[in-house]
Length: 106
Length: 120
Image (cartoon, rainbow over all chains, first blue to last red; front, top):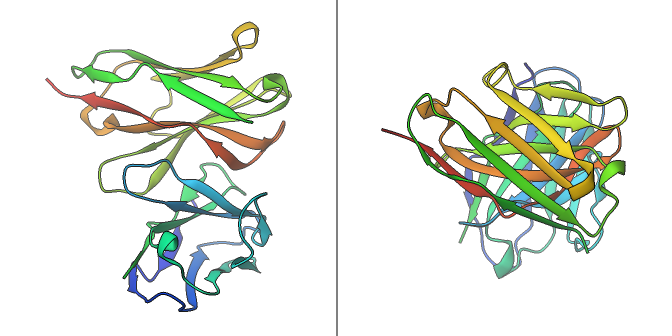
């Protein structure tokens, strides 16, 4: 199975901060990497797929990059509604695997 | 607008069975792959199974293979997950999700989730 190592596991930030989350795959996954945002008690929300393509309706403050094994999610200017937990997902190989999450806290 | 409305969760004893359902609307059900993802309390999501309509192919996580069956009812636009021989470690919120393409691909839409608790 491909292991997805996500870091950091949590971070403290303020409104207006630029935030970067990384995900490293244990083997190459081309660009088959997606990012999701989850708020407590809610279903995750899809943000990015193919490493860097925004889902329709997702604001451009979110961006993704990477290829192969190393990927990043960046939030350019953190807003109150962005405080949440973020997960990466590799869908290049079965079984699909998620990272353990990054909690973005105030 | 895409909607995935889930039902069927609940409390079941170890060894029991449960069927989850996901009624879909807002898109042509036959032309998208679908999947189930679960999330145990305090943990990240875990992929469980998917169904690829092009080829009528199903995939399963090793942890559920032989116990869970994914299937779809095209006449009712409904995805289901039959769960047998349930174990305590199957306790989780289960999400029905739509995949981006008929051949699979990333998750683009999520259902609201349904709680499954396996306990005596």
